[in-house]
Length: 212
Ligand code: DC
Image (cartoon, protein in one colour):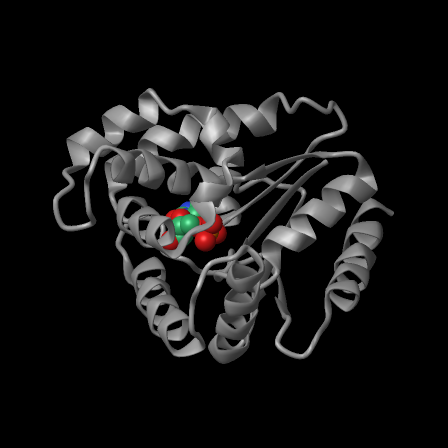
């Protein structure tokens, strides 16, 4: 079984992806972590979002140190900003496409895979068995992200997180290469007024209905 989950930042898509993977014994790929890993590598060599070029980013994608996707440093706001800038580059998206498709075609767990990101249902895996699109009010999402970052020991303030998130949301939704949007056949879940368990229960009911 292949499950595609797309959605906005801090919408709850990553948590849902992990929970569904654990429930059904599927492999999970957080595709945002790939873009973040490229962003972190650029920051590590002294780049900033204004002095990067597409060629250099593509080269990094092909040489990507995949262990960086598990590095807690990719969770900073600086890396998130860089990731959002590189993710808007069509050549970068193309360079990371095969890796994502190969994961879904031969997941470590033969039961299947859950991939979460922004264009999984629309572009990476248009034939996924089941697709979800997760979204929530931006103020709620910024509140969740602020809490998350504070728990990670980062000193952030809600208004700054909100402004950064608005900027990145606009970039993710308006870029020409695979903008964030629901696939036509995606199940849309607004998590603004739902807790983690409620989102999982609802998503689970859809997957079970699909599997018969
Ligand atoms: O989900 P996230 O915040 O970890 O994603 C980091 C950035 O990467 C974000 O700006 C959206 C982008 N992204 C993307 O464009 N396509 C994906 N499949 C996953 C993430």
